[in-house]
Length: 313
Image (cartoon, rainbow, N blue to C red):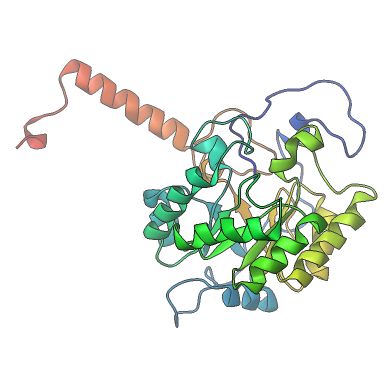
């Protein structure tokens, strides 16, 4: 899953349909095709009868037509805040490559770098299901490699499920994980670990590629995945996939008809700077708030206004 950190900020020249440059994913959104109004529905999918969101809760939400939200989280404090806010699923995404470690893409991040973040999020969020991303190179080689990696995230990190990217090529891995009792979330469309193959961050699933994406989604469902992320795909295609599947779809830049929506939390809260992807709504302006707070701290320390007697022992 992508974050606006490290993404291109501008572009010029026309693009052929289905091969838009990265900049076309950015800028002011057009009028939404559907949705846009918050439904008068429960804000949590977790029944009061148990303390943490489960795969069963997610399946039941699909059956009820109840939408739910997922956010990324990478540390104990923000995980606790999101858990308190009632976010039922937290993703420790490989987007930490951008937001935590400062890599240009998600490709370089390793299992060793992600496991401690998963552990922190699980400690901070007693009610949310915590999903761990399997990073690039940690599962593609074989089902055995995928099982070894996923086992680390569950045993060492305490994750409750894992997410991996790809369609037909990873079905054996998904099947092996599910057979071992590990819940799996799939990821189709713009799969950032394949950014070099795509030639950049581009809308996926247009023209004939839509049928292939639907086939991949059905394959993931058949292999046992409990949900699938649809990233940066046309809204009408995402709506069709959502209607066809018995498992939940989680949209990010995939229109309003998915069963759930996910954002990188720093994008959602306005912590990242520059121009956000068009699918991002900034629900706060934390970048300005933190900048102002840091500047005020600097000024009060420099002038001797802080600390005062009330801050001293």
